[in-house]
Amino acid sequence: MRDTLERYQVWLYLSGILAGMALGHSLPETTAYFEEMLWPVLGVLLYATFTQIPLTHLARAFRDKRFNAALVLGNFLVMPGIVWLLMFLAPADPAVRLGILLVLLVPCTDWFISFTHLGGGDGTRAIAASPILLILQIVLLPLYLWLFLDEAMVDANLAGHLLPVFFGLILTPLLLAWLTEKGAEKRPKVERLVSALGWLPVPALTLVVFLVAGSQIALVTESGGILWLLLVIFTLYLVAAALAGQLLSRIFDLPGARGRTLAYSFGTRNSFVVLPFAIALPDLWAPAVVVIVFQSLVELFGMTGYVKWLPRLIRASDQSPNTGPGTSKSTTQTPY
Image 1 (tube, rainbow, N blue to C red):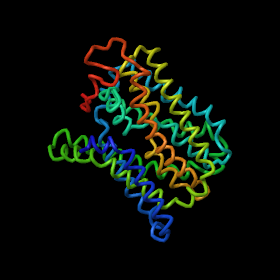
Image 2: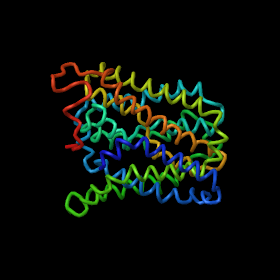
Image 3: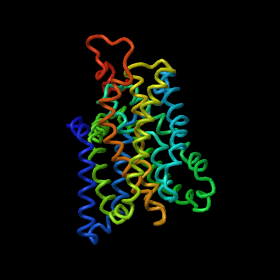
């Protein structure tokens, strides 16, 4: 059932967005409370997602040094460089630019694993790499925003708005997830809880995008003129991410499944983690919310293309008859 949810997650999220927009348009008085409902739902979503990341086994994530070097270099140097270039195409609106930066500068730690598993990547390495990606993005995101926005960030006091969200909605679920995982190592009941929570991210994220679409329908309507430009930017990003994955897989000698895993990591972004930051900002910055949700939708459709394209783009150097370009011996979801 969990695999089925992940396989059809694109359509679930799209249905959630369309249903939210329809309800927000026809019954705006009903959706006026959706934004308040978002916070507890986001907290549950983040907690459930973080419990699926092996936070208590961080040391094991560093075992494949060559793969991790390519992963970190690509996600935290190469892809931010590509984002910097894409910003020349971005609208002048500071809120839209902030939304683009928030969503494109942080690598994904949830459906990155799902699509790696579905698309012939190495699921084991994807799971093991997730703690590295999560910790580094938490540390580096403020630095990226300062570098890209500089005076605009200081003038708008963005840090003052983002810090409470970071501690309340990111750090707290992260700590609770770590404690849950520690408990699961000794208590079977807690281990079963962690397993049950693995079903939650897809329906919880569907509810999140439903609430966002319902509460932000007016902004979506007003932002319609820039959505086509955002579509171009996010599509170019996906193409560049796949090509960067192919290039780094060659440079670091990571053919086949490991190389495809790099590309999936570069292409997927952590939209649900940065969404609370955008929601917490004053109304002036509200378009950033629309940008983040729209990017996640573009990305999900892009990932369906990745599943078919990447096995042909990044091939194994020595495929046996039983290991074609769309399969991998390492796509199991068991990380260790």
